[in-house]
Structure formats: structure tokens, C-alpha cells
Image 1 (cartoon, rainbow, N blue to C red):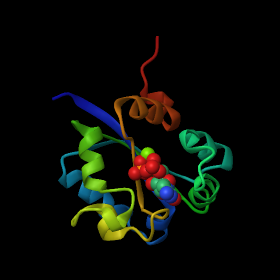
Image 2 (image 1 turned 180 degrees about the vertical axis):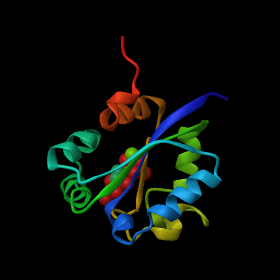
Image 3 (image 1 turned 45 degrees about the vertical axis):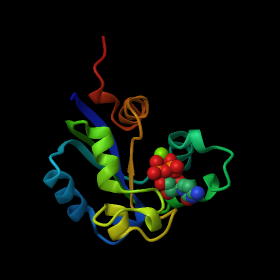
Image 4 (image 1 turned 30 degrees about the horizontal axis):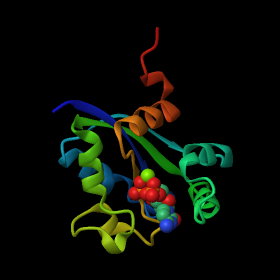
Amino acid sequence: MAIEKTLSIIKPDAVERNLQESFIQRFKKEGFKILAKKEALLTKEEAQDFYIEHKGKVFYESLVNYMTSGPVVLMVLERENAILKNREVMGATNPKDAAPGTLRKEYAVSLEKNSVHGSDSPASAAREVEFFFPELVKCC
Ligand code: CDP
Ligand code: MG
């Protein structure tokens, strides 16, 4: 299986509760390398653009407000099969449906405040890594 990169975001509800280290330890334990990491307060424009695929959905505006409500931790994770593996470690979008032992089952507050983001496909991983870490994407 191929070595992949994926974008992870520790969302405001988790940063607010100081859960960064617990999440990072979990990712390391699952064999991910943290290739890049930075804390940021997203602007409204960044959050709108990042979640553009959801524009027009009922939850879009609230999601953008939530994602700009406090600092997030942005990370590029790398390992074999990273995109799918990260989605497994995160658990289902709705914490009510998330499997035991997943980050969302353990930490999420609600469907919206579900503590963590992860790219959902190779195409979105490529887009999302470049979105926040353009310097990691080789050019020329
Ligand atoms: O984050 P994930 O890829 O699992 O789910 P998504 O369908 O891409 O939705 C992006 C984010 O929007 C979710 O992680 C939730 O924070 C939020 N959301 C929501 O508030 N209400 C929904 N019905 C669906 C998603
Ligand atoms: Mg998604």
C-alpha cells in the first residue's frame, strides 16, 4: 500500500478543552508521522473556502461560524494508507454512529462539534494539504 499524506484538523471544541496532546499521541500510536503542524485562527473566508463542497447545505453557515470560533491545530499526517486509516481513527461524522475507541466517539460534543477533521479521499487530501501547507507541495 502507498505512503500517503492527509490533512488533519483538531477542531475548536477539542483545542478549547486542551486535547491537542491526546490527539497527537493517538495519531503517533497509530503510526502516523506528523510532517507539519501549526495552530491557527481561521478567517471566515478560509473556513468558507475550505468547506466549499458543503456550500448551500443547511449546516454550512453554522459550520463556518464554529470553525472560526477559536483556534484549531492543522496537521499533515503521513503513513501507509493514511487517508483511510485516519478516517478509521476519527470515527463516523456523527459521534452517535462512531465506533468505540474512535476519537469522535471518545471526545466529540455533537455532530457539528465533532473534534477532528480528516481528508476523505486522495483528491481532497491533495487539495487540503496544499490549502494550508502550500510549502509542502513540490513545485517546478
Ligand atoms: O468531517 P466529515 O468528513 O466526517 O463530514 P462532512 O460530511 O464532510 O461534514 C463536514 C463537517 O460538517 C462535519 O465534520 C461536521 O462538523 C459538520 N456537519 C454538521 O454540522 N451537520 C451535518 N449534518 C453534517 C456535517
Ligand atoms: Mg468531509
